[in-house]
Image (cartoon, rainbow, N blue to C red; front, side):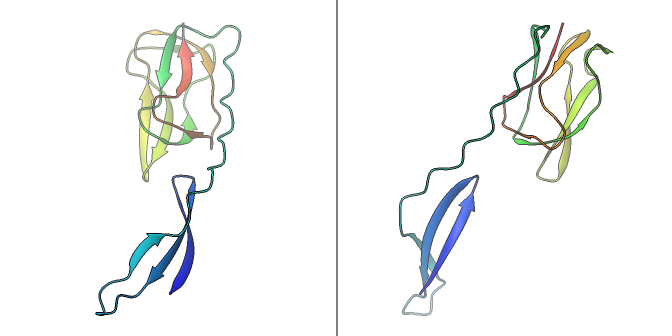
Length: 121
């Protein structure tokens, strides 16, 4: 029997693995209730001039690159920033024409699906 600590999506689990009597593959059984996951850092608040058009993360991942700066004009479909999820680079595009009002994340920040990453006016 072996004990392991496994982290899945920020949740920590203590598991005990034992070999079956018939030589079957080992089975994992929870040993204890999961420990509380560490709280994510609060999202940076939008600047006072934040716009009304939100650019939200399409998937959970990390901010890989910021393509535009506050004040830049963008057209619908222009990449404002890029997130990396499962080794894929996913552009987060402007949903409408406008001007970048705020960038609410930094390169390397973790983001959740639906999190506001930037705003436009």
